[in-house]
Image (cartoon, rainbow, N blue to C red):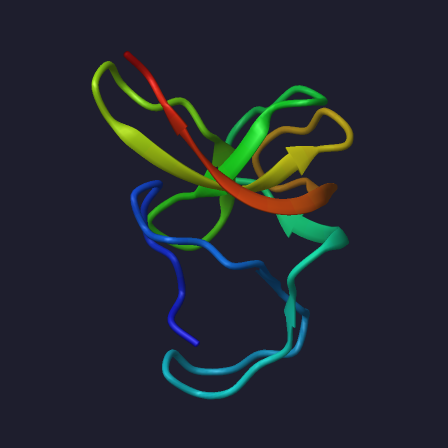
Length: 95
């Protein structure tokens, strides 16, 4: 497993609470509900991607770019909160 560090990284799911080093095996939730620690403010229904530390942030691609998301926030939250995210990876493109 390699930790996502940007919205442009391809995302496949959310790791569990069991720690592992980058490149080692880990458990990954690839569908359903997963707990995600936030590094910014999100609203319920926002698409969630990863920041440079692998924490959840709102997926908000700039014009002409493609950003990967891991799923949608089930509830609102702020930096430091752990929220439920409906895991369903995909991508957003802003024209």
